[in-house]
Image (cartoon, rainbow, N blue to C red; front, side):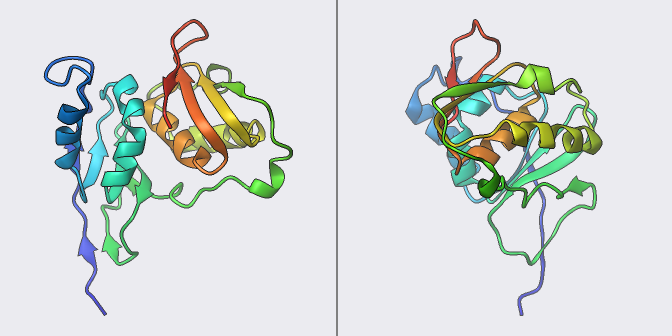
Length: 188
């Protein structure tokens, strides 16, 4: 049996990829992502939300583990690809790693629809595990299979990423709008 591997995380702050040095150039963005391939990363709370969402699929494809730090200092493990033979800092909350949507409770497929995150997320950027535990049942109750789902309203980046990870197998395309008047951003 192989000895457990102690994981250390590389802190990254996702920049605005529409600005220098990226200017939306896919080649420059891919070069940025190569630095994280096979890495254990911790996305810092001041990362650029729109850019992080645009890179959602790329990030989940290249990293081995994905942790998000919150403004209150908590760290949540949301994605892990390595085997179970790892040791992490005790401060990392792993409770949501295996969370899935119960597909048997979803009901019939719907036409494209949106979910108002702002109406459900009232905890701000300095949220706790209890806030997530209160949010999830209400969020799950609004999920139905669809080809196109748009999340609308402000929520912290870790919550948006978590929602995206949960919805990967339930919706065809996932979009995000900061508010009902903003341009939608395709997450996947």
